[in-house]
Length: 344
Figure (cartoon, rainbow, N blue to C red):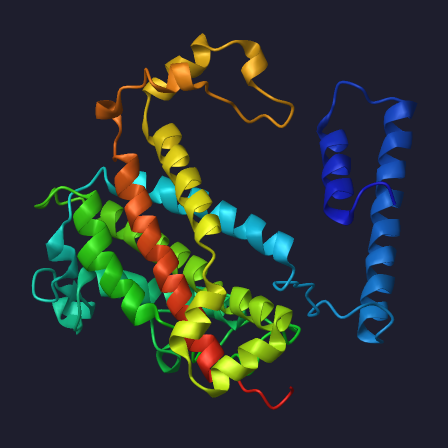
């Protein structure tokens, strides 16, 4: 059918409400719309029957290729954008330490009694992750909750069939405790002004979004480690059996790649957080915009950008991102040192 069932019915109802053109054309259109509804309903019924009898591919099957290096790199670049934008957004608010103090803000239940023995932030994070758990977010191998699994509800949706890409991936390589500590004691203190502005809801919302983005980016280290292991299986297996941490670290470290990432992060921080960049782009020739839509700023123009207008200094964001890459490396080390070698 041309239209699915809901749209065909709404089209029919809209035609019925048009009282200014009651003629034979209207009758024919109405009849055609009703016939379309009937056809669509029959089509849906047949499709449901096919699904019940296994004629179609199971909807729980999910195409997921995290060990494809090109798609993995693309995802990491996208996460860079997300993290840098959220850094800039979080810097709008003060540190707001009361939101992390269990004694500062009480979470009240029915009748005004204290219901949650924790901070405003921990309550917000836990409740968000409970909802996400119901939507099966944490069944994905690239997602790790900060709330212990035993305190999260079961998914209310059918389980997805993930292909097995990691050895015994059961969440044991999570370093979310380190990520949370790094975020609260390093990131927030470097991004935000000291004190409180009482925008607890706004700041905590950004805290949760940033933590989830950071966790995902850092735990992609598992997949990167598996790719590097498979590329040099014999040497990596030998280092793992010897528990040679320094040797493994040398194998997974690419200084030139890390330098390029930090340069890219600095440029993004400059572009995203500085209103002067827009005026510089306006002054450039139209030829500075290439076919992909990316803008190239000449050295002459970039030198004229006033860094005092940056919401956050690019070097600060680059320094924080360097620490993020170090945590990613810790995930790689943890994964490789605990990776079973019985398949070799």
